[in-house]
Amino acid sequence: MGTREFKAESKRLLDLMINSIYTNKEIFLRELVSNASDAIDKLYYKSLTDSNIKISKDDLKIQIDINKEGRTITITDNGIGMTEKELETNLGTIAKSGSLSFKEENEKKEDIDIIGQFGVGFYSAFMVSKEVQVYSKAYGEEKAYCWKSKGVEGYEIEECEKEDVGTKIILYLKDDTEEENYSTFLDDYTIKNIIRKYSDYIRVPIKMEVEHQRPKETLNDSDEKKTEYETYKENETLNSMIPIWKKNKSDIKKEEYNSFYTDKFGDFEEPAKVIHTSMEGNVSYNALLFIPSRMPYDYYTKEFEKGLQLYSNGVLIMDKCSDLLPDYFSFVKGLVDSQDLSLNISREMLQHDRQLKIIAKSIEKKIKSELENMLKLNREEYEKFFKNFGNQLKFGIYNDYGINKDNLQDLILFYSSTEKKLVTLSEYVGRMKERQDKIYYAAGESVDKIDMLPQVEGVKDKGYEILYLTDDIDEFVIQVIFNYQQKQFANVCANNLDLDSKEEKEELQKVNEENKDMFEIMKEAISEVQSVRFTHKLKNHPVCLTSEGAISVEMEKTLNAMPNNQNIKAQTVLEINESHPIAEKIKDLYNTNKEELKKYSKILYNGARLIEGLNIENPTEFSNMICDIISK
Image 1 (cartoon, rainbow, N blue to C red):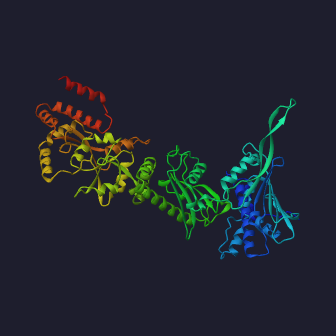
Image 2: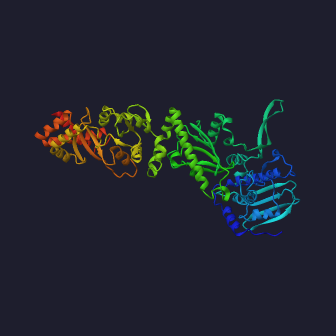
Image 3: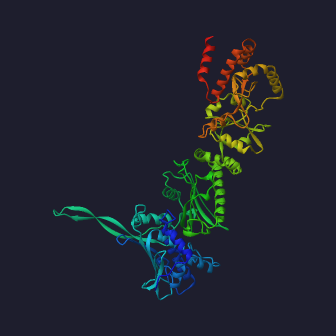
């Protein structure tokens, strides 16, 4: 029989495969094993409705054989097989899929469970093969047929000898090149790893003869025993066949979950949380998710890839499916297995993302729910988790203009000046003072440094709880949340903080009005500030620097520490404690020595900057001024 040409669309695909648009060439084995599994499923299904078919489930298997000398890989199944017409239709035309047709013909029957689309992923064999031969005998047929092809030139189909029902595919590997080492696929260890990676949960055994060595005692010429090693082969089952995520949760021990996690996801520590869940409905899936007990070393590097492993009926489709996780839950590891995914060529991509979006939304809700339960029922464990991944939740609130803030704001924690520990926003609001309408916060490098801020002491002295914001992103997060349970946030270091009584306000306004000319002279000396004024909020401290507008002093430090430093400045006000002896000193200087007043103004301003953790632009001048005053 002469050479037949591929249909045009098949020829184009085959050309792409031969020239390998896929860098991940090892998927050819996954595809051929999945096709073999499909064929076995078809025969087993047929046996359920046809009493003439006598097969035992225990006899069904996929066999892989390697011939290093001949450079061949052979994949054999005892499935339903293909007739001459089916070989022509399935392997000659990509647009026709044996499994797809089978499923369409039986779509109203409930027990159909076919993974693949035979004739689509099959072409991936040409990524590693210079010639492919397919020997097949269909169930119920007398004759067997062989399909052979060396690539885009075409293929041949002819009658051949094959005793057993099923299909045998022989791949003749390409010769090695400088760029590609195809010989690696002739290595037992490589094949075992590929099967365990992609096809570990295929429901029939995948077997291969694997070489082993065992000790053998012999006698030397002096009749002394010596140990030598002999090589023997054993037909091993390479796949486990039963996915842990499809077992009943009640039947799985914690040790099994932990072992699966450390083995599959390369972590040496047990997970902090295991989430084993499933969903039935328009889209059904099983998921096994893990929250790590520590941050991955590469978490904040460009090398880190978020995503869950994606399986279709136990076959790995994608190692990192990023669409299944929002960025703020990118620390979650695990997998999703669904039988409802619509797959396209070689299962590398999904034809439609509707199912993925449904699954992703469900998983997002489940992760959030589990974190809420951990926060409620196991506070110690949650705080450990938050120490590792709390910033990621905060980034989730800040990103995308706060679209996710309602999902995440109840999961974040801040240190409390009252409780001396991490608290939620809900816990803060739940114990607010009567008639308190603001959530007070202060930002700084650490809890201890914030605690020493003059403004903080004044607010605490009035009995208010303050949240201490110690991470760079915290203030940005607070601004995005804007208000929580109708309570707005107030920075205790902002100039508009209003804690005084009406009488106190009127008194302070009067004092500032009386001294406005003095403050104008002081501002001439420190033009960096918006204004200078007296305050009553500092208790025993002489001065502080407060901010006006959206950019606080701490935000200024954070923004200017970024690589694209734009030299952003917060609008600041120098506030002086009207009850401190320094107030009388500057009043006296205003009346007696205005030049000296300007020098004092610079000293007070630079001192306030140091309190806030800001740099002094001219430390030499600052030092000289202090020494000059001390020496008088």
